[in-house]
Image (tube, rainbow, N blue to C red; front, side, top):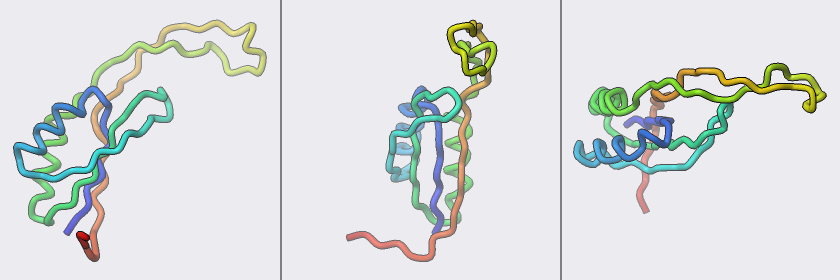
Length: 109
Protein backbone atom coordinates (compact mmCIF):
# COMPACT_ATOMS: atom_id res chain seq x y z
CA UNK A 1 0.00 0.00 0.00
CA UNK A 2 1.18 3.54 -0.80
CA UNK A 3 0.23 7.05 0.26
CA UNK A 4 0.37 9.67 -2.48
CA UNK A 5 0.55 13.30 -1.35
CA UNK A 6 -0.05 15.66 -4.28
CA UNK A 7 0.09 19.45 -3.89
CA UNK A 8 -1.52 21.35 -6.77
CA UNK A 9 -2.73 24.89 -7.39
CA UNK A 10 -6.38 25.57 -6.62
CA UNK A 11 -7.00 26.20 -10.34
CA UNK A 12 -6.29 22.50 -11.03
CA UNK A 13 -8.29 21.10 -8.11
CA UNK A 14 -11.68 20.67 -9.82
CA UNK A 15 -10.29 18.90 -12.89
CA UNK A 16 -8.08 16.66 -10.77
CA UNK A 17 -10.91 15.75 -8.38
CA UNK A 18 -13.14 14.74 -11.27
CA UNK A 19 -10.36 12.67 -12.88
CA UNK A 20 -9.73 10.84 -9.59
CA UNK A 21 -13.45 10.04 -9.26
CA UNK A 22 -13.67 8.76 -12.84
CA UNK A 23 -10.64 6.49 -12.25
CA UNK A 24 -12.09 5.24 -8.93
CA UNK A 25 -9.42 6.79 -6.70
CA UNK A 26 -10.56 7.94 -3.28
CA UNK A 27 -8.83 11.16 -2.27
CA UNK A 28 -8.97 13.46 0.71
CA UNK A 29 -8.54 17.17 -0.09
CA UNK A 30 -6.88 19.66 2.24
CA UNK A 31 -6.59 23.39 1.69
CA UNK A 32 -3.03 24.66 1.89
CA UNK A 33 -1.10 27.82 1.09
CA UNK A 34 2.10 28.16 -0.93
CA UNK A 35 5.09 29.87 0.61
CA UNK A 36 6.50 32.04 -2.20
CA UNK A 37 3.33 33.47 -3.76
CA UNK A 38 1.14 32.78 -0.73
CA UNK A 39 -1.51 31.54 -3.14
CA UNK A 40 -4.07 28.83 -2.53
CA UNK A 41 -3.14 25.21 -3.07
CA UNK A 42 -4.95 21.93 -2.61
CA UNK A 43 -3.22 18.92 -1.10
CA UNK A 44 -4.62 15.53 -2.06
CA UNK A 45 -4.03 12.45 0.10
CA UNK A 46 -4.57 9.21 -1.82
CA UNK A 47 -4.14 5.75 -0.36
CA UNK A 48 -3.82 3.09 -3.04
CA UNK A 49 -2.31 -0.26 -3.90
CA UNK A 50 1.27 -0.11 -5.17
CA UNK A 51 0.21 -1.37 -8.62
CA UNK A 52 -2.08 1.68 -9.11
CA UNK A 53 0.51 4.36 -8.23
CA UNK A 54 1.57 4.93 -11.86
CA UNK A 55 -2.07 5.38 -12.92
CA UNK A 56 -2.55 8.02 -10.19
CA UNK A 57 0.68 9.78 -11.19
CA UNK A 58 -0.48 9.87 -14.83
CA UNK A 59 -3.74 11.54 -13.77
CA UNK A 60 -1.87 14.11 -11.68
CA UNK A 61 0.56 14.79 -14.53
CA UNK A 62 -2.28 15.26 -17.05
CA UNK A 63 -4.41 17.51 -14.82
CA UNK A 64 -1.78 19.76 -13.24
CA UNK A 65 -0.73 22.43 -15.71
CA UNK A 66 2.22 24.79 -15.43
CA UNK A 67 1.44 28.39 -16.34
CA UNK A 68 3.08 31.79 -16.27
CA UNK A 69 1.75 34.31 -13.77
CA UNK A 70 2.62 37.96 -13.29
CA UNK A 71 3.20 38.99 -9.68
CA UNK A 72 4.33 42.24 -8.13
CA UNK A 73 7.62 41.83 -6.29
CA UNK A 74 9.52 44.47 -4.33
CA UNK A 75 12.59 45.85 -6.09
CA UNK A 76 14.63 45.36 -2.92
CA UNK A 77 14.19 43.77 0.44
CA UNK A 78 15.58 46.60 2.56
CA UNK A 79 14.06 47.38 5.92
CA UNK A 80 12.84 50.79 4.71
CA UNK A 81 9.71 49.79 2.78
CA UNK A 82 8.69 53.42 2.20
CA UNK A 83 11.47 53.83 -0.35
CA UNK A 84 11.03 50.54 -2.18
CA UNK A 85 9.17 50.35 -5.47
CA UNK A 86 7.28 47.36 -6.78
CA UNK A 87 7.57 45.96 -10.28
CA UNK A 88 5.83 43.08 -12.09
CA UNK A 89 7.70 39.80 -12.52
CA UNK A 90 6.62 36.73 -14.47
CA UNK A 91 7.05 33.43 -12.67
CA UNK A 92 6.22 29.82 -13.54
CA UNK A 93 3.48 28.41 -11.30
CA UNK A 94 1.39 25.29 -11.30
CA UNK A 95 2.30 21.73 -11.94
CA UNK A 96 2.33 19.42 -8.97
CA UNK A 97 4.60 18.40 -6.13
CA UNK A 98 4.07 14.70 -5.41
CA UNK A 99 5.34 12.43 -2.66
CA UNK A 100 4.82 8.65 -2.69
CA UNK A 101 5.27 7.01 0.71
CA UNK A 102 5.11 3.39 1.83
CA UNK A 103 2.29 2.50 4.22
CA UNK A 104 2.90 -0.14 6.87
CA UNK A 105 -0.73 -0.42 7.95
CA UNK A 106 -4.14 0.93 6.98
CA UNK A 107 -7.19 1.06 9.22
CA UNK A 108 -10.73 2.25 8.62
CA UNK A 109 -12.95 2.75 11.66
